[in-house]
Amino acid sequence: MKPIEKLVKDQLRNLKPCVHGGEVLDAASKSGLLREQVLDFSSSVNPLGPSKKALEAAKAGFKEIPAYPDSECNQLREAIAAHYTCINKRNVVVGNGSTELMYLFAEAFMKEGEKAVMAAPTFGEYEGAIRKTGQKTQFVKLGNDFNIAEGTFIKEIADAKLVFLCNPNNPTSLLIPQEILTSIVERALEQDTLVFLDEDFLEFVENQKSLSLIGKIKKYPNLFILRSFTKIYGLTGLRVGYGVANPEIIDVLMCTKIPWNVNCLAQSAAVAALKDEEHLKVTLELIKKEKAWLAAEFSKFRDFKVYPPDANFFFIDIRETGLKAVELTSRLLHQGILIRDCSSFNGLDQYFVRIAVKTHSENARLIDALKQAVKN
Ligand SMILES: Cc1ncc(COP(=O)(O)O)c(C=O)c1O
Image (cartoon, rainbow, N blue to C red; front, side, top):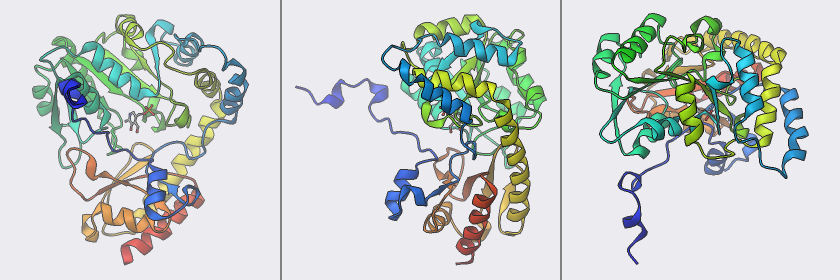
């Protein structure tokens, strides 16, 4: 028989998994620590964890395990529509984490010879999703301030089938100014380009309701908006996210997705999480307070260049410390603190780190560890 490698589709032959934050087990085993000894600032999720009501709903869902879950996630789609009021169930598709929907979207829409455009740096799975289709990715490098240069970006998308935008962006924690966002979506509409707008971190932004484009989907039939239960809802390990768009797009995705893609526990927990507004309120208050505290503490590190964060994580240029991100990350890990070395992001050099906002005692531990790490 031929080597298996020769039987694999060309575009899948040399795929490598994307690097992510949150690899706590791996970090622990590399540094000889137990998982419980590592405090994870590398993945930017709710530091309080999920709502207790969501966990209770997941437990109550145990009795449903012997049956297949609802393949169409009807109850959850209705709950999501009710949460926003301006949309209905036919505007919503649910995925096994929002990542599934990136791959599904690319699979459904990218045809032979077409190209997708995205910023550099941005979240790595957009590129992974396009690479899997065998089509081309074009990166548009962000400027020194990590903002999108409107003119350049619009020029680059001229012959694109699909544009990925992340608002606020990972890893920079920066919002796209609203007028630039609108002008990209409108130009894309004029030229039949689809826009995949990732709003997974928008729920951490104070005036998020006025910044979201969910209310604008009727105006923009080319727009697909991504949301997740991983980040502010903290249902990270259950894997559930969703997309909002016009039924023409949603119907295609509903028919293209695998059946039963979201398990019954995830569906029940997500419905309950949406209803627990108190948990969201407490989370947002904590993030606001701790973000301000961390910003003040980081400003005492004169060699840090801290980009003012719009989301629940900080993006820091540490080159003036003389340390590379890999070195700072390793020094912190020896003290049981895991941060994200951003060197793997396309468009960044080796001097950027990303640090999530956690609870006060955890943030205080981070600052103590940083003082040690930078002093050495
Ligand atoms: C911007 C962004 N979008 C999507 C995801 C994936 O989220 P999910 O857990 O919903 O698949 C991540 C994960 O880090 C992310 O940073």
